[in-house]
Length: 170
Image (tube, rainbow, N blue to C red; front, top):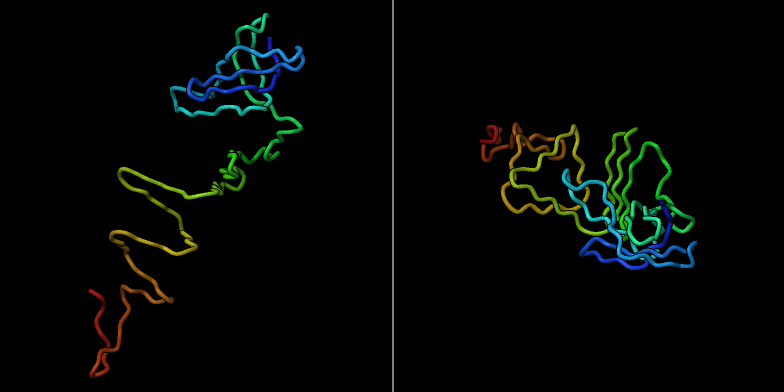
């Protein structure tokens, strides 16, 4: 049978939780396994929090069962009602969303973003906008450099003392 309840206690290490069933005189379950969406294809560690409403699949004596999922409620509202936007919101306010209608992936992060790759990080777009100061440790290589509308590749200077133009950069 399925029963809605409130998470009473969690064990993050074993991925287990105990649930109170208010409709059954506040009966507290034994430790229940918490279901996750996938295991072999990619692992994640979502755990409900104490006080969160969950749906459980239980045996007829409420002695054994599983936590299937969490349930939205008047206390825990959906972060967004949209068919086009998938959103994952974290406790610290960080949000990652994808708008499939606009084809926009957005990450609003409450802290620092670290990206590490063994081989390379490639950004490909007609325009890459960077707002803020840049710190580069290592070599910066570019096919051209445009500064104030002038190409570094073909830009020439007046050469003293005769005032003629210099050649293109080497």
